[in-house]
Amino acid sequence: GQQVMQIPQYQHVQEGEDFTTYCNSSTTLSNIQWYKQRPGGHPVFLIQLVKSGEVKKQKRLTFQFGEAKKNSSLHITATQTTDVGTYFCYGGTSYGKLTFGQGTILTVHP
Amino acid sequence: NAGVTQTPKFQVLKTGQSMTLQCAQDMNHNSMYWYRQDPGMGLRLIYYSASEGTTDKGEVPNGYNVSRLNKREFSLRLESAAPSQTSVYFCASRRSSDEKLFFGSGTQLSVL
Image (cartoon, rainbow over all chains, first blue to last red; front, side):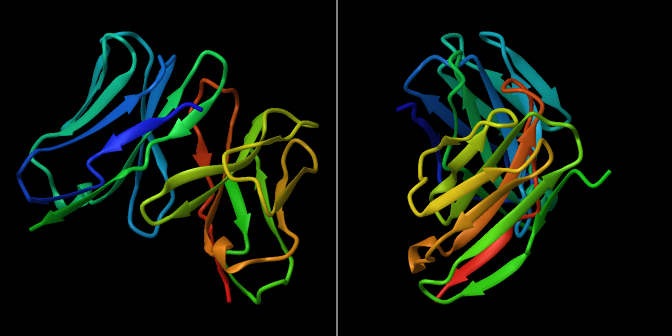
C-alpha cells in the first residue's frame, strides 16, 4: 500500500532557530496537505499543495512540493513557542487513497 | 456552526465491553472518517465513508464496525473492547477527496 514517511519523528529547537520536516512518498501524489496538532488538540489544516514544484508561504512557514510530486517539506523560520505541536503531512493519490505521515513532534525551548 | 462534534470526550471500558463513539458534522460534507492516534504511530485510518450509504475499511479495521446513519452522522462501534484499542479516536469529514479535513475534538478511550 501507499506509504508516506515523515522525518524526523522529534525535533527540539531553541526559540529563534529554524525547523524543517520532510515527507516522502513511495508513489506519485496528486496533492499533499499539511496539518498542525497542538498538544491535547486535534489536527488543523494548514495548506494544500497540488502542482509540481509548488512553493507556498504562510508568514514564517514555507511549504514545498517536489518536482516529482513524491516529497514535500515544511520549513519554519525563527520558531516561536506558539509553533509547538505535531506537524503531519497527508498525501493523496489520483485513485483516492490518502494517508498521513507519522508526524513530527516539535518542541521549542524559550 | 459546530463543525464536527464527537461524543464522548473520555471513556473508560473494561475488556470485553462494547461501546459506540458518535460523530456528527453540520457542514453538509459527503465524506467522513474515523482515525485512531497512538504515540509514534501518527493517525491511522480505521474506516471511512466516501458518501452517504457507503463504508470502507481503512488501514486498521479489525475490532471495529461503523455505521453511516445519514449524511450527518458516522458512528464507530467497538463490539468487544481490548486493551490494544486504548487510543485517542478522531472523527473527520470533508466535502470531497481533494479538500481539507475537518476534525472533531477527539475521544480518549482507555480499555482496562
